[in-house]
Image (cartoon, helix red, strand yellow):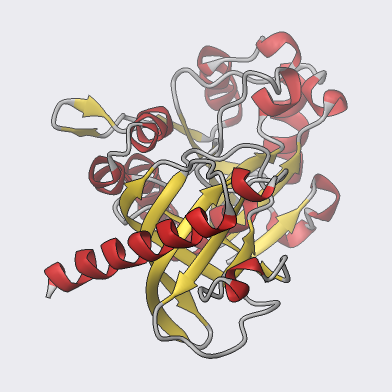
Length: 309
């Protein structure tokens, strides 16, 4: 999947496409249904299938204090979108200048001039342009005037509930990993790069991979039984996600201990799949008490995986 990062990198050969626009946070089953529509129409018209996303997401710019924790940061979003059979991902820098453009400018300059959109698929609640004045009705007028197709997205439902990123965040906050996985179409995971840490885990007999998550907010916290996908193979283990209060941690990160692993993962991007929550994150009165709890957590994770056999 080709990545076009920034409007300035849209080239003449990128004109003519079937496009959808949205946050696509999580790339869940609802998103996947929309993307399947995009692929189907693109195939029928023999045009590239393109998805447009914004960085940062609009609410993160306008009201960052109200912006929810992301299910997927941009790198993860690209990873999952690339598995949907799309041809291009257009990432638009969302800033005050872009947000203050008139809706007509968005349609004429971006959709028509730069992209020459032949068919557009968006939610009927999609708003755009200065003061969010642009809406689906305005797109309908433009589609009639300029001759491009327009399709509203239909919400996918599971057990009579609309699949949404908000519902998935709620499931994760409630430690309901099974419901989150059902809506995502896969177990929830976090991706990040392994970096050097304080090496405290090694001193306690439980060496850990310190995974830097590059997130301002996390959708969940605690200790989990995990599976990890790395360049050196797949491993099981236990991980703490959060601030590590016992050692005065200041940045939310993931520390993972892999069972029976001997190797070097420093600098690697890995995916950590959360399988079961063991307990909430907590602060212990001493490092010795922390060590004893890590032993219990590791045993609980081993017993969980043993029960799967």
